[in-house]
Every structure is written in C-alpha cells, then in structure tokens.
Amino acid sequence: MAKDVASSGHLLGQLIGDWWERYVVLPMLQSVATELNMFADNRYIKRTCRSEKIHWTDYDGNTVDYDFVLEINGTPTKKGTPVAFMESFWRRGARHSKDKARDDTNKLLPMRETYPSARFLAIAASGEFTEPARDYVKSRGVSLFFVPKSKIVEAFSLSGFNIDYDDRATEETKNEIAKIFQNKLDPKTASEVALKLREAVGDGAFTGFIHTIVSSLSAQPVEIEIRQATLSEPAIFRSIEEAAEFLVTPSFTPTEVEAGYTYKVTYSDGSDFFREIPTLKALKQLNSQLLELLSHMSSVTEKPRLHI
Image (cartoon, rainbow, N blue to C red; front, side, top):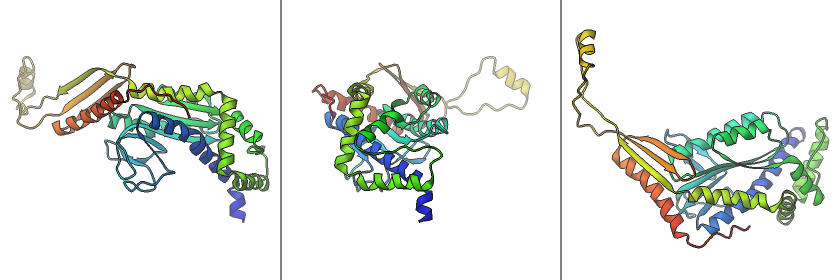
C-alpha cells in the first residue's frame, strides 16, 4: 500500500496522459488517415508485423519507439512507408520542460533524415510546457499542438473530476484523486471530457492542426539534386615539396570502386531533405519512398473533409 500511495501522483499523470493520447490526439490522426487512405499506427491496436511497441530504425541503426506513425500501404500485418511521426504527453508541472522538449524533438528528427517520405514530425503536448520549451520544438522544424493545463483541468471539472492538487498536498490526497479518476473514467465519460475540451479550446485549434498535417504531406518537390561523389586512387609523394608541386594543378585517377551519392530534395513549403548515400541501390530505394508518397497524395483526388 505504501508503494501505491508513494506513486499516486505519477499514476494520475499516467492516466491523464493516456486519456490525452487516446481520446484527443488519436482521433485527429485517425481523421487524417481516413481522409488520406493511410494507416494510423498506435499502441491501442495489435499488429503482427511489430511488437507491443511502435519501433522504427534510423539510418544509424538506432531503434526507437513512437506514440503514433502514419503510413502509406500499412496494414495490421505489414508495415507501410512512414510519412508522419508524433509524440504526445501530459505534464502537470513546468519543471524540466526544456529537457522534455529536447528529448522528444531529438527523438523525432532522425526519422526525417532517414525517410524522405517522413514529411511531418510533431509533438502533441498538454499541461505545463514553458514558452522556451515550445520555441525549442518549433525552431527545430517540429510541429506543436499544445493545450495548456487550465483547459484540461476545466474540461475534467465540467464532468465532475478534480485532477489538480496543491504542490503541498499529502500523498493520501493525491492517492484519493487518482483512485477516483481511475474508477470513474470509463470510455463514454472519457469521450465526453474530450468533447468538452474541444469546446473549451475552440474547434479551430483542432482543425488547424489537421490541416497542418495534410499541408505538410501535400508539399511538392520543386527541385531534386543528385550528386555522385568522386573517388580516386591516392596520390602518394615522398616529400612535402612534391605534394606542393602536385597541388598546383592536381590530377587524380578515378577508381573502379562504386562512388557514393548525395540526395537533396527542396519542397514548395521551404523545407528540404538531404542524405549521403553509399550505393546506387540505396539511392533508388530512397527515391522510391518519396515517389510512393507523391503518387499516393496525387491519387487522393477528393478534397479532405477533415472532420473528427
């Protein structure tokens, strides 16, 4: 019992975070997925092509789990091509906001550098999240959907829930609040609170975020630049004077080893993608991922209604 009481504040935070993720953030992504014929991967569904966690591997071989991933041609049994990655969280206090911003942002950014199709990276934050932390996220090119703590507290209060407490509150008080929350918040009530939150915040905040996702995925390449790196046999000298003489008008002998490549795409929204690629095969694979996204978006001919 002592262990349960000691962790009651943390438990309440987890419960609110789960509600935010499932009843506020997920419906927005499901709306986009439905309208754009994509697959919205999340931890509330089972997939035989992955474990319990939503793992993706970056170009350095690091495997990370994410809260949400939008995929083209994904199914319950097969991973598709990723086009969007998102993290979500609830924070009761503002402490260490910048650390949280840095951790989640740096967790997302490698996916943009790994997959040219990963056009949208975002964090859906609720609670206390300081302005410097929010600025950090946006300055790295990661989209932010943010709802302040007061709106979350208000939405739950309208449904008869108290989710806040004084910083000096006893563990017993926190434990009581957590228990009531856990016992009373059924799926129907959770959906009602989410609706009240939408009313309190304003519908425009939600539809605006959805439009941001679609806009990012719809941006067209305006320039694609492919370069082949030059490789040569080494020029070897017995003295620094010989090296200096050679460098006046250097001439190298090409090798037969396959050269590396660079791949850069500039988009109509001002963003770009850049990668150094070791082989032609990998270059073709990378280009095909982007082609798949563009072909898919072109096939979605009906203008998205974007409702949830």
